[in-house]
Image (cartoon, rainbow, N blue to C red; front, side, top):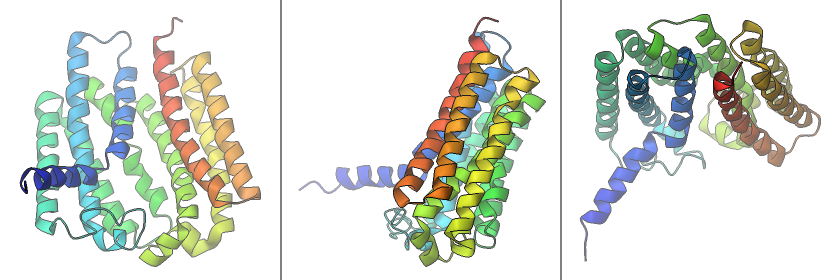
Length: 298
């Protein structure tokens, strides 16, 4: 009986799963939008090369942050159905293996960004790693129910990283994109926390539904969708986009507000799940609309 190939394949899948591939894909997508918007016209071959290398470097560092998060939270993950399957939570990977994997990813990603993109992008990406893996995971998450609000700053950095990769600076356009993701994060995450509240209660983490209750959290989700609506109009107001983006932003943001309103008025776990899923659609299509709008003839 073959006992070598299967464990090797299984070990690879365990390490890969710790990088939270779906989350990292969204991070890289948002970074790519920042890169595209930083180029006034059609990207040159040199621009495309920089974009590809920057996406690779950002993917590696973002994956490293996710792995480090899994290491720090392994005991918490073991108590939650959503995360109990992770190799770190089950003890199938040692702390040293996990830490070494995170260090290798972060080191290679940082080197790639420094040598083949620019030092600013490398330092901003590394600061994002520290913000998520250390400040959010180690400090904020176990201490305050506002953890996702404050820690959301690191999650909002991808378009800033993308902009810096192509421009070598951080412009107001990049900061507008940062603000959109920053305001999107709380209603997105709290919708998840609402229907996973028992998991968070068992874990001991002070998530908002645990510390302040279901009704208060639902109100916060609704209020944040209103503020997010206004932020989503800023690319048009600043002149970054045209009417195409504005129409998409209004429709998508109105939809998010509608989900927030329904969640506030008549809660159910099923509706919370729908709200969480729509939040992912909202951000993905919003940034896709920015991308399409960027290439529409004026």
